[in-house]
Length: 295
Figure 1: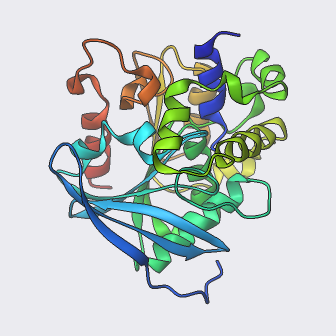
Figure 2: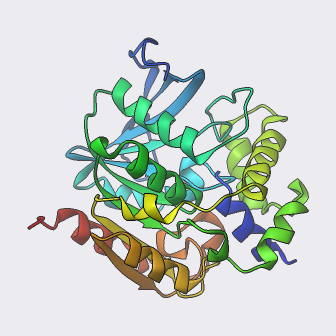
């Protein structure tokens, strides 16, 4: 299996205690290359110290990354564009990037509960949510388990059924090894986390979750009332028919098929090629969907 196929597999496995202190801790203000300032911090969430970053002002949009990823490796290219008109809240999930691990396997349901708890801690009652890859699956679970906190959702290359990827994917996942992880993702993790053992932990938890992945039942998908934009690349690892079927099952949804591979439409770190142009990203499509008034 070549390195690109390895990446496609890795990005698919993303990878409350409500009475805990709701005050964010260790808040910092940082400046990035584009001279944007952002607030970052850690919040106590269900036994985790959960890391987040906040950019811009306006209506809140939560960004949920994919497997093996950090905020920057998935969203660095689109955050400055989205933050021009919105308050961007980017999170890192259990064992990913700067967020701690808990002594428990990963699950999309738990990730959904963790995001909901973080938003409560940040006093955000309702937000739009954009999840990429495994983050898209987490976003589906947020809409199922916590629909009251979601205004609209954007599902980027989200997986809901085992038949949504080629059959070889599952055999590859059973043999997943850290050495097959793209160097860009390893570097992105090491840049934000000095714990040398954490990279292996993240990899192994992500792989185990995907090996045991179970379909989201049709009745749960059909129960979703949140307006949704489903995005897929025409050369995505997610099968096109899966995205079409998801569009049919989520009543209030739109489907956008974008030229390119898994994550190329958001400038995911491993997809950047010479001649990369921001104008080729899917941001205008996302903004048009989010800004559209519901009838």
